[in-house]
Length: 271
Length: 322
Ligand SMILES: [Fe+2]
Ligand SMILES: [Fe+2]
Image (cartoon, rainbow over all chains, first blue to last red; front, side, top):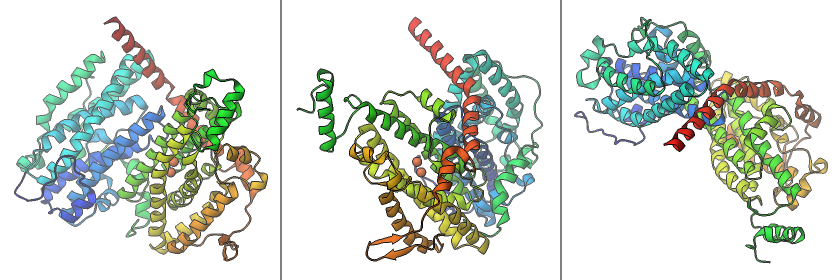
């Protein structure tokens, strides 16, 4: 924890409202880092929200909606915090930035595909986020640390959900096995980008976590599950990435268009 | 007769007498108790229809999850739709205690054999519709459902207690959406008014046809499944929303609404029951898209459910072998 007196214990609600009212503004550099975390979570929540009333069974409607809600909660906290650096709200950042200003990693914007592809994406991102948030609990910035402490517990459940479905799909029927292998093939090229260091992170020292430091644990954890699934790590194509610099695949634009349409039709309105 | 006499020891006549006693004493019928066939059938129909309504009701609101105009509203809406899925789950479980399987209920819904509340066969073209659904549709649901917490069938009554707690939050969030819109820009205010104009009459019709035309009601009331008549509940609802509409600064589209000193209630105008019957018969604006969507999700998910079942069987086998 840093020098500030503000401290939230693990598990205590740490909402967007708390943050915008009580927290000290971050530096612009730290705000950009928080924005990356917030964008990842927001874009994932937006993707998962699509599944509501479309899931394979009612229990999955509930589970996917729950995961989406958790991610949205994390996004709101990180974006509210980031916005303080520019006197912007979470909604200013979510609704009034353009595609090239979003800094989520590209894996988060990849389409839902079928249920298998969604699970493959969940498998990758939940393992990534678990390692990340556990490490960020020790961030030198107390706000990042507090948001991460709460998020770490929630993404642990997301990881467990994804793991169970990986096993069921991989070892269930021929069809499900074929689909989960295909789904993972689509998603895996975007793994590499998650673990690339850059100047921004290096400049933040102990407030941030260098992505490359998370790779070994990620590989170990995913390999263990894949082995139980009797699946291999997909080889070959590695996506160029660039999400952190605002370079995106063609899937982000339509997602944002849908998300932002109403807010942008009424600029200045409150809801 | 002692209440705890096991029912299998009784003749049918004695069992019926005991059933009547439990109902008369305002106590609860439990799944293991004997009950008349017609009571069981009525409950299965009512509880499964109610469950289907929760599930189909996720669609018109889910329509706005991806476009909610603020992150806070998005979070509240997601939580609400998730609650509705949960309501569906509790209610399916309650119906299962009566001996019907969930697969059967799903099948009946998708095939169009089972009914669900007609209110969900209307479209939600504007964001204000999310406000109107919360305020009017969940509001009407509360008026309908609070008395059901005392329904004579135990599992149903208990499910309703849980559900009603959440419904009041649903109504409040709808009211807040409309309040913000009504007090916002002119475009927002107009959006709210236009939406309330569309939802008012369908919401009033959620209580079912007028008492004189409601043949099943009398028996359900005798069995204490239903506690108040359709018209009584509708009146309660009108009495609740008229003052609320004034706080909202929105007009209800019914010129006949006025306080009736003598009755101690608000009068309201006649409803277009032909329109209601059209929607009930499947000719509403969105009947076919709601069912089609449910069927599509079910069909698209078939391979997933098969995989889960195959995996569970495999795990069981391994557990037995070890
Ligand atoms: Fe409900
Ligand atoms: Fe509700």
